[in-house]
Image (cartoon, rainbow, N blue to C red; front, side):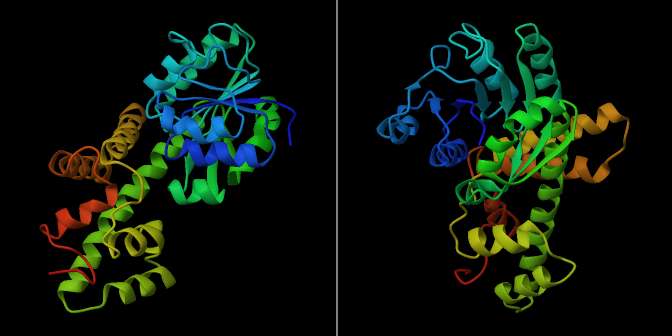
Length: 296
C-alpha cells in the first residue's frame, strides 16, 4: 500500500463504501461531505471529518460526486480542498464530462498537483464488495502512485489514456448499459406476456449471447424482486447518457441509437421522477404493472 494519506470527498451511497475499503486497508483517511449522517460512521472510527476539505489532511484527494460542477466546487470553491494547501494528486472518481477534469488538470498543474480521472463501473454492490472496475485517465507516474489506493477499492484498475479518457470510456460504458437495460427489460416483458417464466428467460440469456449486466444483476436482483433499488437515479443516468451524446456530436459521429435512448430515458425520468431508480423503467414499459412473480 502507498504511504499517502487520503482526503475522500463524497461519502454517499457509492463513496461511503469505497472510502470504508480504504480505511479497512489501513490508509490514513479524512472525509468531507455536506451530509453529517454520511460522515458519522467515519468520525466514530477516528477519521477527521468536515463539510468541506480545505482544512482536512490528505496527500491524495479523491472525489466521488454527482457532476463535474460539484467536483470543481469541492476542489476550488469556497473551502475547497485545493485552496489552502498543496495536494500531490487529485483523483476524480465521479462520472462527469471530460472537459471539466481536463480544465482542472491545467489549473492545478500550477500548484504541482497531478490530476487523474478514474470513474468506476459496478454499482453499489461492487463498491461494497470491492469489485468495481476503474477506468483511469492521466499520466503514468501519477497513475503508478495512486494505483494501490484504487486497487483497495476496485477489482480491476485499467489506465485507458491521458486525463479525460476515463470519463470518455465511462460515458460510453453507461450508454451501453442504458441500451442493454432498456432492451432486456422490453424482451423480458414480451416473453412474460407470452406465458414464459421471467427468471428462466434471464437464466437462458445470461448463459448465451444475450448476456449483460442487466440480465445478470439488474433484472433478477432489482426488478423481479420488486425492489427497484439498484442504486442509480434516473436523473444521474440521463446526465451520463447526455455526456455520451455530446461526445458523439463532438466526434462528428451520427448515433441514432444513442439519440433514441437519450429520448427514451429522458421521458422515463420526466414520467417517473428524477430520483427514481433506473430499474423502475420496467414498470413504465409494462404499463404500470409489476414484472415477475408480483405481476397483476
